[in-house]
Image (cartoon, rainbow, N blue to C red; front, side, top):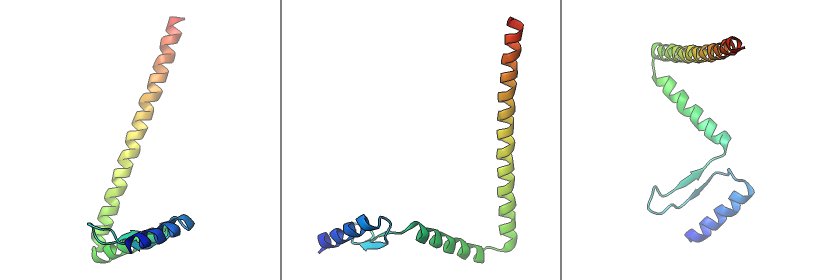
Length: 100
């Protein structure tokens, strides 16, 4: 029976690679689920909405501001790396000019 189930699922997979299906998975949870990307996106959105409903707005705002500050720090770091790179290029040009 399990072999027939796997065969049916393999046939479905060949036709539509992201088709949702359930399969007996011996020794583990009992089921394996495959979902289309759209379904995964909807499920993740549903989970995020559930969390946002339970977390106070003040906390959500604080976390969002914290994330923005973290991203600004990343931008500042990237800009400093680019400046150091430009400084090295300028130094190389200066050294070549002195050589001539």
